[in-house]
Amino acid sequence: MRLYLSSLQGRRVMDAKGDKLARFVDLTIPTGQATAEAKHVILRTQEGLRRADAHRLVIGQEGMICEQPYDSWEAFDDTQAEVRLIEDVMDKQVVDIGNRKIIRVNDIVLDYTAARVLIRAVCVGPTSFLRRLGGERLAGVSRSLLKNRETTIDWHHVMPLGSVHSALRLAVPWDKAAAFHPADLAMLMEDLDSQEQIAMLSNLDLEKAADTLASIEEDQLRAAILRRLAPEKASDIVEEMSPDDAADFLADLPAPDADAILDGMEKPSSESVRRLMEYDERTAGGIMTTEFVALPPDIAVDEAIKRIRAIAEEAEAIYYIYVVDAENHLAGVFSLRELIVSKSKDLLGSIMTEPVIHAETEWSDHECADLMARYDFISLPVTDADEHLLGIITIDDVIDLVMERGGWRRRAQRRRPA
Image (cartoon, rainbow, N blue to C red):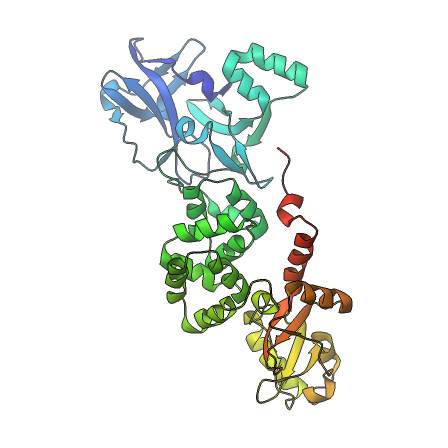
């Protein structure tokens, strides 16, 4: 028998003899449960809330019977590790895993069969909302006027976000969300409350958490999330970011908060970020990253490939490899393609291109963007006035600048319709 959870609210629950005992309050499932079967029914009695086994519940048209003896009903403890379907899911925001968006649940579809209560789907949209207000008659009007069928999402495609008692108290399957692209996770975070945002980040690995935080477009939101994180956790996440992103984010924080995060990072990483924070954010120095590949001119191609393999994971971009002398002056550049097609014993000095088009740290960010657009560069080296190589500007930063110049941001482009 198919039924809606809202239709059970407040209904009488009797014992096997037909004596009135209680009123229906809620159903629960264990946290993190893979199969969607109700475990307990919560009942309101004269002595307060009690719970009984859901499989002892008999649901009929006129009412419900609990075949479990009344004296074996347990006192309900709200700290138990269970999801309350009405309290924690109905009228709450959940993640629609399939469509990677936040939805609001109006009702829950149940299947009752052979004394088992199975959770099949959640209901969203105007039809389910109107049905709860005025019953099936009003829902029928909605379907007629709006030509809108009952919109449901399978329970297995839904991820509860938390409860009114504590955010993400539920052991929700965040392993499913971890497969989302960081940009999708960032969009989800924008729809969560502050506690849920922190809980979500805490359930991601550090690299995914860093990429997700970096994908949030609103500077104030990013800063607020960083400030709410424990300093140790914030340090671990920021350390996984590229230095330029980390510097940008920490610059939005009050100095004491930024210093606390930097102090918790490994010294090489924190020093790199501190150096970048010294530059004006609208200059080449302010948007460059210090994660790049630079090699001396007197090593052979085969040795260069070995070194690149060893350090490539730490570099933000490796399409261009820069050549520097013993004093770190920018001497040349070659592409990864040029490296691969060269002979293994060729020296880098013989395959590099010189002189190298580059920017200096005090150049404006828009000058850098114009230079990269003119030459179709994927990255642009940045030097000081004496041509010491200090960092590179990558194409993703330039795209951001171009969008800002046009008066709009990526967030506006990808905003979901209401």
